[in-house]
Length: 91
Image (cartoon, rainbow, N blue to C red; front, side):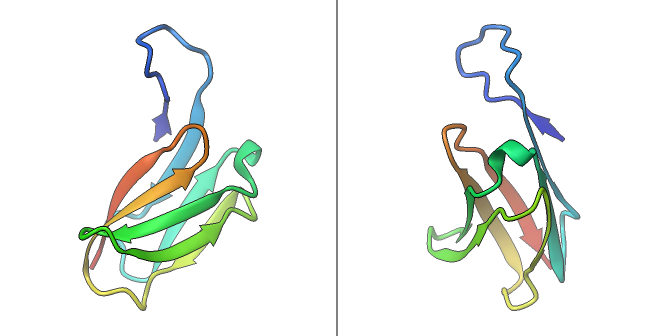
């Protein structure tokens, strides 16, 4: 999946390549980003807004262990100027 932070409605060429899979997942959530975003932080929240996990993007492809989380819906946020938000399910 390619997300485009196109908030202006203009045809912008700046694209953010960001993907997460599998969704739903039970053990690991794989995240792939452009190398441009290495060093940025991913924040994971429960549906009630509690911060439950933070991960620094140290590699362009990461496998994040989510086995310790309870089953349910979660929200992830890439904390940078794009402020990408994504949802995923732990089952």
